[in-house]
Length: 268
Image (cartoon, rainbow, N blue to C red; front, side, top):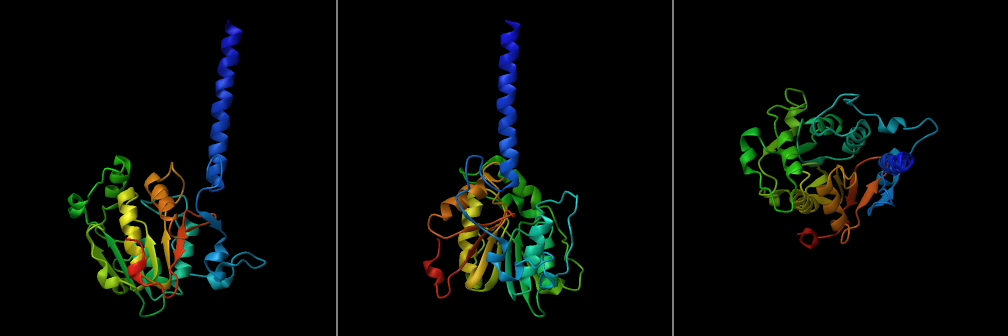
């Protein structure tokens, strides 16, 4: 009897350990446990040729002013690689829009690395506006709690810097935000607000109308169903009608608006 129990215990342990190994390996490879995620994966240089590596790795064409994250835990932070990518893309943009200011690091990197006269617009809930947040029945409580924790800043990384004048800070709930004045306006849009599915859907529709023909929309936290299920589910559903792609080695999803596509024909 004892031998049977030991064998059964070891069998269960092996199954659990095997599942853990598969999950860890999948996370490292940015894939699902039993196969690729729905969005087609592209290499970084397919996002922009400037990222093509030379014989020594990244070239001096991707040199930017930068604030690293290192081992620090930062609320809502992109990885160092992702922050670098956003900073490099800002060098080729003059108008940029961000959903989800959080600490203001992305807004700062954009303003710091963009050419003189460029404009950055970013929106967040002020701490005093958290009551305006509208949770939908499709949204998890954990996503809601996480979004409200990130809406806690009254000053930002760019505050008091010499590029602050190039950043326009908007406050309010992104669901009720009227993006009409920004239609066809931005070269680059970053969606990194609430991870709740209803917000991802709303922010995505607005982002795709804000971006110019030929411009880029990037989404953060496309990192599988366990990491941010609202993001994962919303973007997989959107990909059924819009050719979204996943940038390998990152949690970025990306879409380039076709040139000549009227905003009225984009996602509602």
